[in-house]
Image (tube, rainbow, N blue to C red):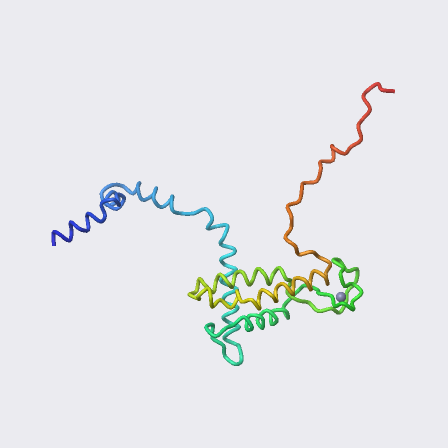
Length: 194
Ligand SMILES: [Zn+2]
């Protein structure tokens, strides 16, 4: 028994906080915990919550699917089906080529064109579901959200919506801050110039 205890002590010998905490005040553990807690937890929690909600939504979709569909049998084609299903809840007007407002970012009047999910929302959604799939034990190579068909579909939606709405979805370049007004003001004549 002694030898086992000795072995354990040796294993823990470099873990000084373990013995320190039992004998002294909790000062050591305080330092230890504060160093491990990360400041990024609060900033990422919104994303994490959204991801969890999206994952639950997709789970619900699978549950209600006819014929029944399990996650393990879910393919890129099913993900596309899911994305098209979401379009009915979309709030983004996507003009058809025959609409007079085709290519107008801000149409002056209503039109009967359909509402869809905006490309940016779908793109972000797929990113979250893709991460959630692997966090829930899915294999990266079997990730239906990373399927080629899904990538192609998103690209197609992006091109279609950018044409229909006249909005460029290219990655935004960092804009230069506008020149301060004072720089462009005409020079005042020096006092007493006239
Ligand atoms: Zn329209």
